Length: 129
Length: 129
DNA sequence: TTAGTTACTCATAAAATTATTAGTTATTGA
DNA sequence: TCAATAACTAATAATTTTATGAGTAACTAA
Image (cartoon, rainbow over all chains, first blue to last red):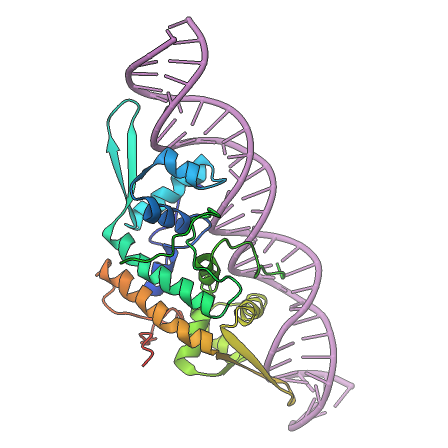
């Protein structure tokens, strides 16, 4: 662990793009930020049920490297760090929404489009307008 | 190996939908079928550089279970089996195309939208019309 | 009789991802 | 002096994914 891939050898923009959503936590983080706006490290950790520091820090780094989220550090004491969706991240939301709808069209069981942040009470449907 | 997940515990339609594109080979298979139409097992194997039987068979099963592709068996000798994109699979193509475009917008290096089938000569741009 | 074909399966190994537990730095407040 | 806080990092372990190398059935053609 603790080296992450990034400029792997994705053979196409498709694979490269999908890498931004892959793994257990990336979409959950994206949805949390989309739900809440700016969040700091500890707040994110509280939202993401069961994530550990090692994994959260790594995943935030990956998302930052993919330019999906931004990291802003305020040198207070103790430090404050805030994470936000970037423009690129915000522009991913309609795509994620399309994936939700596509899934649900062929899977009528789960009636409601819900986000991937993992909270059972999350009602966010990835609307971007 | 040789048990695949499927009704995992995806917490949302988003995660469930993304599962259909995840792993090393799924999008490559989708793109091959989109490029070529119907393909049999051996033909797919030839297209997908470096895949082994164990992994190809497993991945085809996963995609079949997700209803992205269909399997049709002709009881000739030796057997003939053909794989095709389903309606659901075809309807995924515009989403994949959006992911390509989104990636490229923020990554002007790779000028050309190419599919994920892995062939360097593949010019397919995931147009669906 | 033997080799060839297709579409697989099986056991196992290697590699990658995710989890666990425990630090660390710099500072404040009690 | 001691505990507390925020945002991490490091070493290692467990789990999951992917790869390797072989084998199978049911024929056919040589």
